[in-house]
Amino acid sequence: MAAKWAEKMTALVKSVGAFGKANKPVAEAFHTLEIATRAEGTLDAKTHELIALAVAVTTRCDGCITAHAAAAKKAGASQAEISAALGTAIALNAGAAYVYSARALEAYEEL
Image (tube, rainbow, N blue to C red; front, side):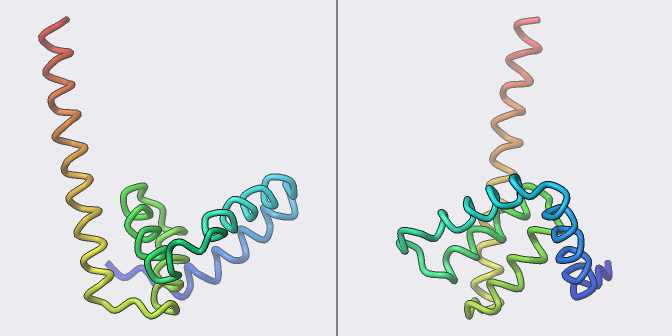
């Protein structure tokens, strides 16, 4: 599964830039939101990016994976730390499927 992540990063920057020109208010609001997630300084940059990368996996966003993998690496996250964060994402997705499986059985029983 060769994804060519460097090419994805270039394309992402270009497409996000184009969207920013097409819808400046939304692009600015998104940027403000991203800044707000770091404003308190409670999380260091590496921890922030590890969380963001795990969430990117759970939301299946290639653009987010691209941006946050690069940012995590830049923030000094090791491959072991990234793998641990991604393991948590895998477990969370499995947990969500488990909970929703119980809901599906409840729906079946009620219907």
